[in-house]
Image (cartoon, rainbow over all chains, first blue to last red):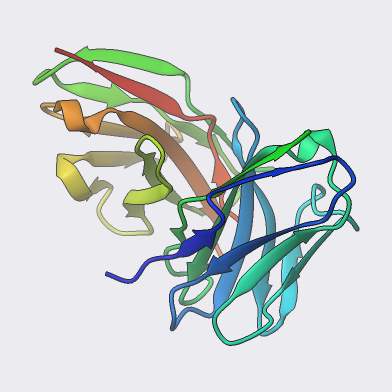
Length: 113
Length: 113
C-alpha cells in the first residue's frame, strides 16, 4: 500500500539554524500539507499546497516558514531561523483531491536547543 | 470557528471490554468527521470517516463511530478491545471545501490486562 514517507525521523538543531524537513507524498496525489504537534498539544495545521503554490496557511506559518516541491516527488518544509518553540513533531500529509482523505507520514521530531 | 473537543485525555479499559471515546465538535457549516489513530512511534492513520449518508460508520480494526448532528458528536466505539489497540486516538473535523483538518487534543487508550 502506498504511503507518505518523511526524513529525517529525528532532527536536533541549534536555535537560529535553518532546517529542511522532507516528505515524499503518495505518487498520484496532488494536494500536500504540513501539520505540527507540539508535545502535549493538538495537531495543528500549518499549510496546504497545490499546483505549486500555497492554497491555505495558518497564523503559525509566518515568514520563517516556506514550502517547496523541488521535483516531482519531494515536498519540503523549511524553517529559516529556528526558535525554541519550533520544537515539535512535524507531519506531512497528501491527498488526491481536497475532498479526499489526507494520508499522513510518520512525522519528523524536531528539537531546537 | 470550528473546534473539536475530546473530553477524556486518557481512558483505561480492560482487555476484551467495550470502549467509547468521546468527541464533540462545533461548526456553523457542514463538516466531514474523522478519527485517526497514532500507534507508539508511528504516524497518524485513518480509522474511519464520515462524509455523508449513514450516520453509523465502520472503520478498520473493528472500530465504528456514530455521527449525531443534534448533539454535534462523533463518538468512537469498539465492542471488545485488544492490547494492540493501545494508542492515541484523534477526532478531527474538516469543513466542506476547506483544506485543513482541525484536530482534537487526543485520547490515550490504555488497555489493561
